[in-house]
Length: 223
Ligand code: UTP
Image (cartoon, rainbow, N blue to C red):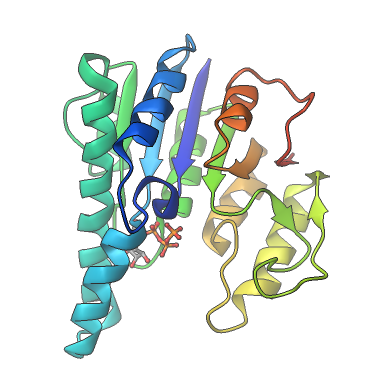
């Protein structure tokens, strides 16, 4: 089977990059038989550099270019941890990723204007992957942003259509973050792929998602 795993930057690259954690993630990925494509976000690496550029009045697409480089730096750390089974450079486009022949292919961002959520959904769609795993900073899909709304409730299973409307509602509010960007949610909806959303720090949920083990999985499943 072929899987796409999207690692939010806040998981792979928080303020202090935790190499032990990256190694643990790589070991879990190596423990399954599948071919795995991993998309890595920018995290603090991106935030730090984008802030400096914004302070110099750069326009948003130029800042996106900086963000893309940050995602690629983080992606290289995962390549270091995966070792010789990984395509030895960060794939810079979906076309490059799908033509690579290694068991693991790692990529970051591609072009300005979207985030790595959209990249991972587009990659999964292009590959015809059965499943997209979203390892994020929240432990599932909530009715509202759980970081700002204490009444937000986790939804264990939902339709992609519901995901799109939740994300559209959240992203309309300035500064609000959602588990996946709107473009990513729309791609998930149109391609009918199954999507498992979970707390990226929870390696047990990563294991369950990789092994298709719904029993005990504490995140959300979108179908
Ligand atoms: P992320 O995918 O990490 O975006 O890319 P994010 O949603 O801001 O952060 P997470 O999800 O919490 O990790 C970091 C930045 O890189 C640029 C955007 O500016 C994005 O905010 N980027 C990334 C692109 O312009 N294109 C891409 O394909 C990916």
